[in-house]
Amino acid sequence: MSAPTVRFGQRQCVIRFGGVAVRASLRAVVVVAGLTASAAVLAVLAIGFGKYHVVPRDVLGVLAGVNTSFDRVVILEWRMPRMLMALLVGAAFGVSGAIFQALTRNPLGSPDIIGINAGAYTGALAIMATVGGGYYAVAGGALAGGLVTAVLVYALSYRNGIAGYRLIVVGIAVSAVLNSVNQWIVIKLDHHTAVTAAVWQQGSLSGMTWSQVVPMAICLVALAAALLALGPQLPVLQLGDDAAGALGVHPDRARLGYLVVGVGLVALACAAAGPIAFIALAAPQLARRLTASPGVALVPAAVMGAVLLLVCDVLAARMFGDNAIPVGPVTVSLGGSYLVYLLVTQARRR
Image (cartoon, rainbow, N blue to C red; front, side, top):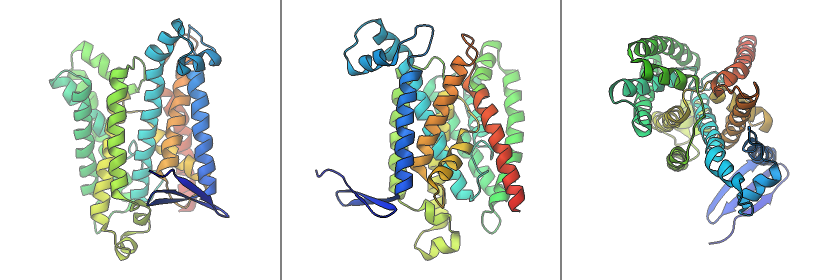
């Protein structure tokens, strides 16, 4: 198998691997490489933080297999799963946000705004109330709840096509109803399950183990393969249904495929760490501004989401000393400001 070749033009670069060629702007490649390097540096620092502090040199020694002291247990067994889960969950939220924002052609069309996160939480709560929990059961419930919510929002907002603002308004209304249902379910649960559900709702990466990281990574690879199978139809859909149909893309069929993949990503992320808010909203738009791309791109959104969630998790763990808090309140605090900025920008444009 031949090695991949990269050719750089004036402002474009083409990456060829066998018979597959990918074209990207040089700025986007530089931004993604910079974000990836930043994530790697931050990951090394993150797994060294804690009551038992490990300096970066010793962390690199553990990763290289040179350091076999007690640092190895702390890094590989206690802290590495949490760091990797932050990257995976952040990437999942980033890609799902990019998909929904591209489908709605609106920066406010993220899954936490239009109710997909609330629906996934409803499905997970239903499983907790009936079956009693378990990672795979909760993941299945979150997936079912997210899919049902997405279909409901899509059906209620469909009228001679999908309008971005109509879908967002319907999604906000459905999300409000689901939040009330979720609170009612929590009240009806027994004390232990209700506390677990309340903590899970905040969004937390504490207590992650390899038994959660491995299935999360496998499922993300499967969904990434599904995205590759859909091909480059998402940028075409952003041109509108008429233009997409003229270019040979079946809008409804392609939109349904991306909808299923987007909901699957949200459900996986919510099942693993809870309905963490605003990562799916902010990551695609921040990546778009850094890369100066005309539309929402999936790979920059994934890397940006991973970096954002890892930064927020480090802040949540170390901002108040030894009193760590869930990562959800940190993402809400930072993402809420960005949401206000988006609302003001959209109002000025209108």
